Length: 461
Image 1: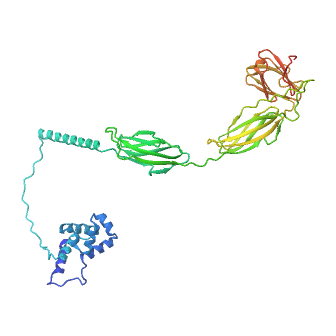
Image 2 (image 1 turned 90 degrees about the horizontal axis):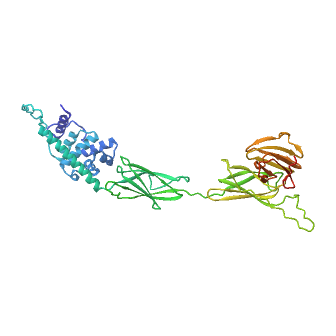
Image 3 (image 1 turned 30 degrees about the horizontal axis):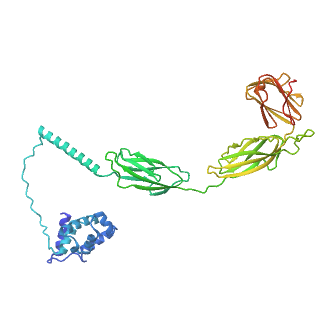
């Protein structure tokens, strides 16, 4: 005996007046059963509406037993069956109770007579003639062609779509150092995407076979406005909407560089012209060092006028060209500055890419002690050298040949005398003053250098 038959018999037993009911407690109404089952399931009407696709007001009417609020008996039976299955109840039993509560009376549960089905002749297999096959193929081709025409008509009638996945918001902010941004999104396959900035400049890109596209644009500091649209290259139709995006690049305050000079100290004196310049800086990309001549060094010999004449003014030495000093990764910098005898004002300027600068100055005095001669060979030359009248031991009485690029320094208290075998290849710097080559030929020459007089050719060695 099936569960359905058992339920029907219990229902008839409850409705029959000639037999006493077996239940000692009243049977709950249909609405109460549905409400209790839903509460046991732990869902509310809105969750039940979403799961069963039955409107919540109809479910509430079923639980209240107000069947007049339902659209009709056919819909009510369908609602009850689906709701009973969702709540884990027997749908046939629920429908039986609904009929009883509606007053439809006892339901006939007697078994029905099942008549044997007549024998039927076996079906013959399908047979295909050539005409049928050709007709079927032509039908398929026709349907495909009609479908293709439909797709093309739909495509020509519908404009392309455009969407942006990166950035995911209409207004976004990037790092202060950012100079570019990559937009990403989707459109129709092989569609053309146009990105226009606030100045009207356009960048075009083409989507791939599945409609994915990406394009990198240039950013400037501050607000960057972009408009993005799509075009179907086959139909020439533009997208209905143009998307607007803003990318902000923060602008921070521009700070001036800091500058500290370790050397030289203010008022320092030097006995040669190689002045060490060093210090530290921050927020600077370069340091420029320059020097200006401010007067003769104290105690320097002054020109003596001849009787009846005035003294010839001291010639102002040429200032060196400003030198750009490389700033290290830790902000330090250092470089020598070659100066001649005299008082000098040294200026150190630190600057950054934004044009902000910081400047420090130092006053120094250069007073050479004795005479210092720097000899530079340009080509090839033989040299023989005397310092304060004595031969230089490292070169010797026979002299020595030096090749191109060789630099030698000789220092004496009174004098330095140089004999060169190629005057045009020998360049001299005396106490920081560059004289260059003193002769124009490759013939041997001898030059005498002192601290108080100009170079003099002697040729007596």
